[in-house]
Amino acid sequence: MRHNKLFLVLCSLLVVVAGAVSAKETDEAQLKQERSAIDKRLAAAEAACYQKFAVNGCLRSARQQARSERAAVQQRENDLKDAARRERTDAHRQELQDKQAAAAEKAALGGAHPAPTGPRAHRPNPPAPSAHRSPANQSASVGNAEQARARRAQDAAQARQRLLDKQSAAAERAQALRRHQAQREASGHPQAAPLPDPP
Image (cartoon, one colour):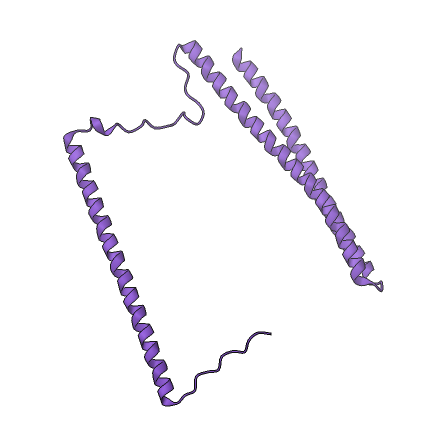
């Protein structure tokens, strides 16, 4: 008896969804035709504008009219998308409720606890606290912690050395630049004149 009711509910849901899909496709096709009609009207208006003396003003008003018509079509498209999104959400919610009801009914008939559903259903067991570890595991974790600490100290030392190398290279470049400028001044090459002040 229960399966017959479920079958009838599913069939009616399919009929409703099929009707909604065909209505949605019809609305989408109508909106596409409206966009095409707007583009054709704009092209005709632009062609007519080129026959007039004040072309720019005519083009501006024709394009403004097309923009406002497109905005109305876009708003209707957004409304259709929102409605479809709400329908999908409602269908998903109904599916979850059906699953929970079926699980509760199965549990009631079988005498077992209902299977958990929802976001917490597949959560793994938490790890055991460290107080229950064996001494061998504790010593291994201490050794791993010491290795990690030594690795971090070594990485920090290497980073400091790289920074010192960069600073010494920058100092050498600055000193070489000063020597080069002193040689140019000593050889008699005039220094380039500064740029004039902006107006």
